[in-house]
Every structure is written in C-alpha cells, then in structure tokens.
Amino acid sequence: MDEETGMKLVTWVAAILITLAFNISIGAAAQSQTEMNQEACGKYKKADVELNKIYQQILRDYASDKNFIQKMRSAQRAWMAFRDAHVNSIYPDPSPQAYGSVNPMCRCAILERLTNDRIAMLSEWTDGAPEGDVCAGSKKVKR
Image (tube, rainbow, N blue to C red; front, side, top):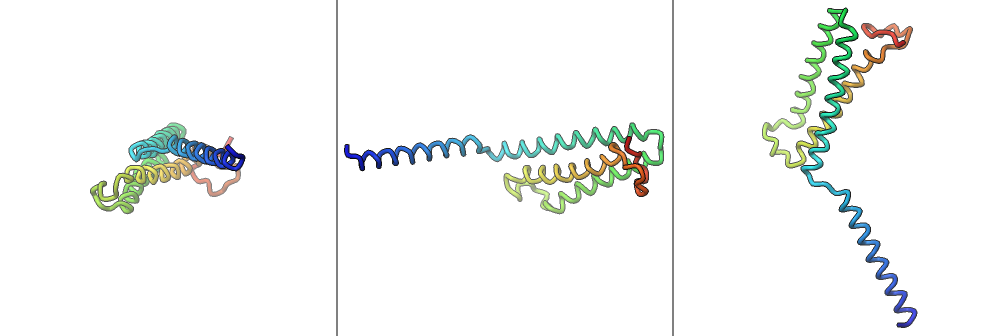
C-alpha cells in the first residue's frame, strides 16, 4: 500500500469513527415523547409539592392573624383558578389529542413555570420583608 492510499484509509476510518461516536452520543441523549412528557410532568409535580410546603408554612407562621389567613386562602384559590384558566386559554380544545403527543409535556411545562412564579410570590411571606419596607403589608420583617 502506498503512502497516499494509506492516508486515505486513515482519513476514511477516522471519519467513520467520528460519525459513529456522534451517533452514539446523540442516541444516548434521545428520549421518547412519553419520557419527555413524564420528565416535564415530574418537574411540575415537584414544583407543586414545593408550593404546597411554602403555602402550609405561611398558614402556620401567620396562624394568629385570622384575617390574613382568610385573605391568603382566598388569594390561593383565585391563583389556582387563574392557573387553570390560563392553561385552558392556551389549549381550549377539550380533547388533549387535538394538540398531539407533546401536549402533556407542554401543559406541564406551563404549569411548572406558573407554579414557580407563585412560589416566588409566596416566598415573600416566608422570607420576610426587609426592615423599613413601608410597602410590606402583612409580610413579617426579615430576621
């Protein structure tokens, strides 16, 4: 085998190995739609658990303020109604099949984002407001 043929062979083998390695790495990261749906909905469920923990903590921390508790419960119910109405405005067709197999993933991603936004809002009560914040309202001062 002459030098030129040998170099072509080495180049060809290298190209095949690079292509094979790339395809293996892509395949390892690929997921089925069902797996992607489960992952997205798992993230939403995790956020929902965190939201419920924070909400329950607020109810415990502020239990002596009955008026606040009543208003917080009302706000949480209203937020849940908003959350559900918002998702339904994005996907108004009552049949989930109308939006394809990605629908569960997309719905759960939206629910996760909304839930994380609500967690940030409620965290203002668990974290407390900075001392001197004249607009803190019912939020306790940070310690």
